[in-house]
Length: 559
Picture 1 (cartoon, one colour):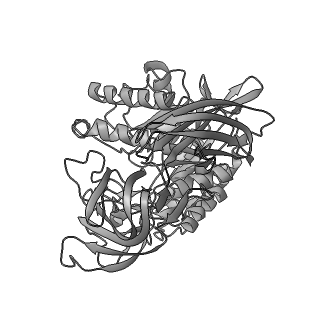
Picture 2 (tube, helix red, strand yellow):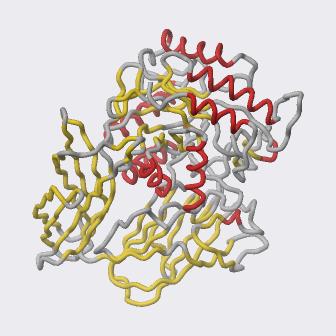
Picture 3 (spheres, rainbow, N blue to C red):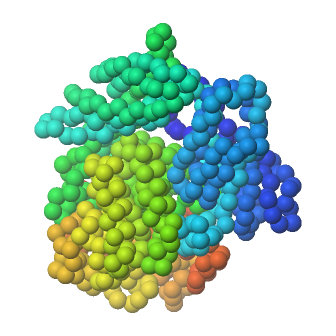
């Protein structure tokens, strides 16, 4: 399953995931042995490969000819793609999609091979041993598209409030796969209305960006209580009048604005009650199936959450589709967590981080659920070099999308020098866990410092991580750390302190569920897990579940 709705009616598409492939490791005692697997698949979910670091090849045969496009929603960490033994493309980063176009493919049966690599090296600045597991494999969907003379790569629809009405800023990218110059008719419709048509001349093998504004009347806004979605359709017609290609996407009319110390959605001041969530499951690793993703969202909503932070990378688009449909707010961030100054000075860092931003926004800009773009969680924001990196990445986001505020989660206690750059100041704090300062004192202390001694003064303020660890089933009247009793007690005081702090726009609890960490990174993590989940890795409730649920339901979504 690729999306929760149909994206093409004219272009012929075939999902290659959701079926059996062959997997073969390229090193180790099982090298060269074939295993039948269903894709998406992380090899760590297979019996012999729970700790395999290396290269593995996934192979499958497909029928096609002519011009084709292979779309990969996620391959970890890096991908090399071969067709009939010849390399046709490659990609870096597990968490953003990529595509490969081939022209002149001979009609018939072909062999697709995807070489996934989950090793760490100097060539990889973002994938490093970390406080979450770096899995290997084809972790998200794969699609085969059969193209004609040209195709629409994306259609973006960004709503802009104009007085009492709305306009839609539409941008399309059209790509020629023809060997000849061609003239096309281009039509764009929103919910079958407001058609915009124009003639488009494409030289052989080139691409074009088309921008339009469409005024909307009588629309319903997308909001938590009524997550109204609109369908935008772009169609490309040949000179004969035949429809050559189409692309369908969804968006919502909603406005996210920062005014002073507050965040507004459609003119309402919001209070975020959220969770940080990793894509992680003991049965599926990071290749969660649709039903497991929806189960996570159902649990979060039962707890009273209205928001999810996609820590620490762009998420599967199925997750975003479900958030769109259910009115859940999302903070989505690029892939970087806890990088030191030395790691940020890796010559590959800036390019790889900025590529991740480009791919994330290009793929996900239409999702109304995304209300904040985030970057560089807990990186070297206290350094001058780090400042320049943050500045460049914020400028890149601003260039690509002005419809959402920007932020980054900091753990630099009173030393962060980057708070003049984002629209929202965000802090990760762990009072009563990593130190014994009472939560209400600690939250107020850092908030007062931001407002009086930093360039973040006067901006909205969020707590983007806070929490305590507990081992599921470990209960003791002594209420010591790692017990369920202590976690419940700590979370009660932490949540109360944050949501009662004047000027604070909300909280993301660390974290939704217990997750596996990279065994190379292991640092005082029992079970080689980050155990701060409100539920464990199997989604079993800890004692803190009822505490969080009671508190979250006692605060409204709006202030």
